[in-house]
Every structure is written in structure tokens, then in C-alpha cells.
Length: 85
Image (cartoon, rainbow, N blue to C red; front, side, top):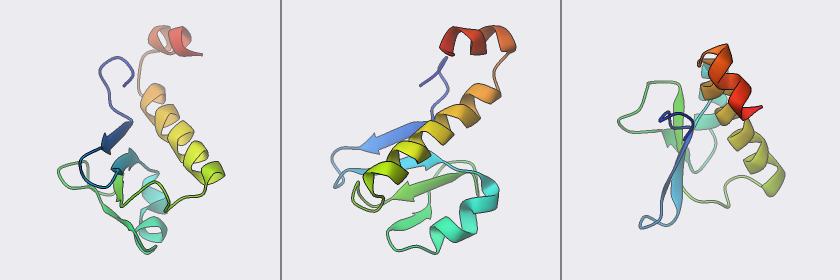
């Protein structure tokens, strides 16, 4: 979380599935991949649920977590953003 805003949620008790924020323009391509679907109870077309950590390779997982964090950070004030840069 950044300033009480979520960018990554993991369900430890559900086979390590996780939800992550995504670019709405990538949503269709991502959800077309096996193991990825719309995240339940999250903003439509902005969050995906990934079945487990193996769906993405290490490089893509790291990149997607960083992108999710950046999307959340970008919506905060410049003053708050400065604390996290």
C-alpha cells in the first residue's frame, strides 16, 4: 500500500493468487491469458486476478508490480509522491 491505497493484494490461503492494478488498455490482452481474470470486487478493467505466481515470469512480475505501484502513486499529490521517489 501507498498512503492507504492498494496496488497489490495476495491471497496466501488461495494458492498464492493475487490481484494487481493494470492499465485498462492492457486489460483485454491480459485477461485473454490463461490464469488471469477480472479481479472480483475491484475497479472494472483496472484490476486483474492472477491465479498464482507462476503465471508471470520473474521479470514480468516485477515489471507489473512496479507499474501497479506507479499507477497508484501517480494519482496522489506531488507532495506525497515526493516521499516515495
